[in-house]
Length: 393
Image 1 (cartoon, rainbow, N blue to C red):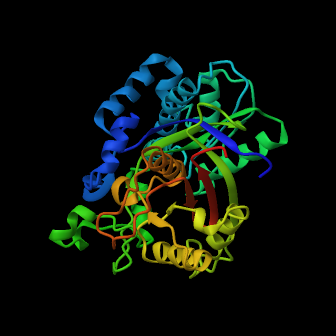
Image 2 (spheres, helix red, strand yellow):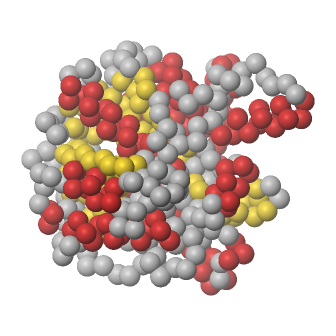
């Protein structure tokens, strides 16, 4: 990277809540936020946003007639984007770019409109425009009245971190001075969960031992014998600016990306070659011993968790940082997950406290957390690694 990028604000909505104080309190607790809810007549493990935030979504729908028809992915993105630019001191109408993506897109509306079509042979007028993947950034741009590019994309579970990569390129090229980036996901639907079960990667309540039911998602547990991925919903965005900023939460000082040679549509190589390449790229100007922690992708699947861990061992050898993940607590939020990982990393640096996975093997805790590496990867083996530092120096 030619110059470090300042993260001047980060806002999120997830099962953790939306206020930094509440989010940090939830991280300090060893309790999971995963619960059971009926989908298609069967109980499923999911992580949902708090009811008070859902009430805010309903209020947003009522605030403008056009918002009533929007998918929840878009509404979540609008709410967090408003908060993010407020925290950064940006204003509506300012010059800044927007890149917010989603893995699945407007899942809720798409299923609703498709069901309507199957039942009646017709669909509503707004079915097409409200289910396009470009919907998120374009509506956020409408809401914030920004002057700048608006980009949407879907790169599965690494979507939010790919938005960071895009923004870094724009900012370092001089084509933009500020960028709003992130991801939004509302995947808790009958069809989406059915797809995950079809892949045989989803946690099943029937498979959970009564004593272990509180750990429905056993991400970062290398002794598990079954896949245990659980879906969560949420959105998170960050405001990025070039160079030193006195209000910076943290700095991006390394970026990396790579794609695996895949053998199957959802596979990743045994030793996560894509992660090895992306981590090495992000760390090319950093001593391995300077990395204090890694927020892993670790989705709770057998192959996903172990291959990433093997990749980390290959790259760091004897200098293994502290390792953690948040998916045992908030589930896998697909396209938003990378930005929630970034939020966790920033909070650990701010509070100088490592958040452990409660059921995992204990690690040696370092005194200071100054540099944290964040990983994300999705179907197709498209890995991204971002190195954050606490200070500009």
